[in-house]
Image 1 (cartoon, rainbow, N blue to C red):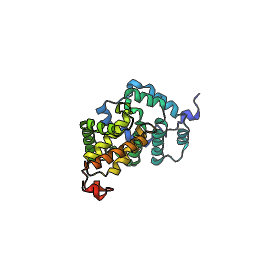
Image 2 (image 1 turned 120 degrees about the vertical axis):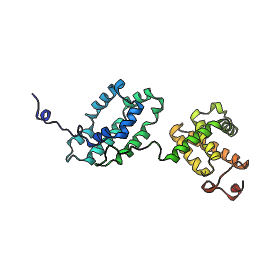
Image 3 (image 1 turned 135 degrees about the horizontal axis):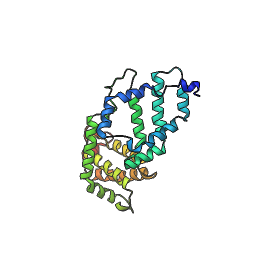
Length: 253
């Protein structure tokens, strides 16, 4: 016989307002259609996540919460994505199976989804835009130019790295370390408006995320030597904000 709970099920999750907003969002639907995204070939993943969700403490608290409103709905969905989904080994393994680039993307994607959802409001309609991949067109153009210049000047950057690595041949240096340093050198030489110290700080931080535990120290030391060589050879071409932190001697080079 059905219980009273069976006859009167709690519908907080089924009627979640944020889920319904996403379901109707035109930008979201168009993106899924254009990329041909679907779980049809991996239907076991949503099922696994659902089974984990219904025994999740946060879900239990949400289903018992009262009153039910937009704020509570949004908080739960954000926790679901940044907590349960991002920590799911099944989901991560499946995404990595589809694309090797997912092995370090989960943290950043979760952050972007959270920022997007936080901008949603109760009256956000189907035309509400989703968070773009780039902050603006200038950022997108910068990334494209940096990538192209790094590829074009790869040999030159490798020679600088090789010359400034004591007792190390370029072939023995971790590939990610080399790529980080090549991007940093390219930015230093090809983007005169960016201060050297800003470039160094940013790529040392990038090394902490994408390279080994000791890479940031190694990359820092090599880049410092390369910057000194570039200064000594008078190869700097900095102007405007790019001169911040440079001495008068450096400015005249």
